[in-house]
Every structure is written in structure tokens, then in C-alpha cells.
Image (tube, rainbow, N blue to C red; front, top):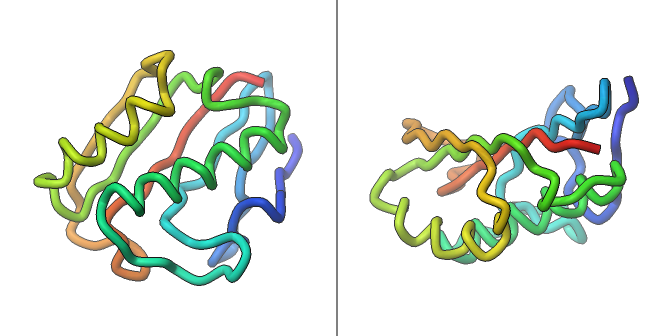
Length: 123
């Protein structure tokens, strides 16, 4: 088991790792729209937040010698399911391999985020 850390993604805001690499997989912790340069949450439209979240995940996966194209499972958490269509407009541009996915509406996300996404990918 190997802990993954990159400065190209935000530091964890709690007692967890950005990702863990084990058994041929990398399991990424959920990301919200935190700017990795400032480690500050940047609220925005669902399109802006989804873009930042996926860019953060992309950086973590690349540090683990993986990538979005090797993603096999995605979980999307939305604070408002009405943002589903707009989130998908960004999502489909990044996850062209169409991994398995679950999308759920949750009552709240850390820092008032509109979206949080976690992934599992092959290494």
C-alpha cells in the first residue's frame, strides 16, 4: 500500500490521504473545488466546480502513474440533483472511457460545495 500525495492537488482537509495505491488500483478520496495553489475552496457554478474537482482528481491520478482514462468507478455527490445535467456536460469531456458511475444527491457537502467526486482507477 502506498499513500499518494501531489502539490498539484489540494491538501487533505482531514485525516486522510489524497489517494491510496494498492493491488493494481488507485483509490482517490473525494475532491471538492479547492484550488491547489491556495488550498482555499473556490465556490462557483456547477460547471466551474466540476472542472476544478476533475482537474484535482486528474493530478492525483497522474501522481499515482494512472489517469482519468484508467478510471473504472466514479461516485458523484451533488448538493442539488438539479445540477445533474450541467455536471454531465463537464464530466463527459473528461471521462471519455465511460467508467461505471453512481450519482447521488446529498444534503450538504464540505465547505458548501455543489459537487464532490471520488474515483477508483487502474494503475
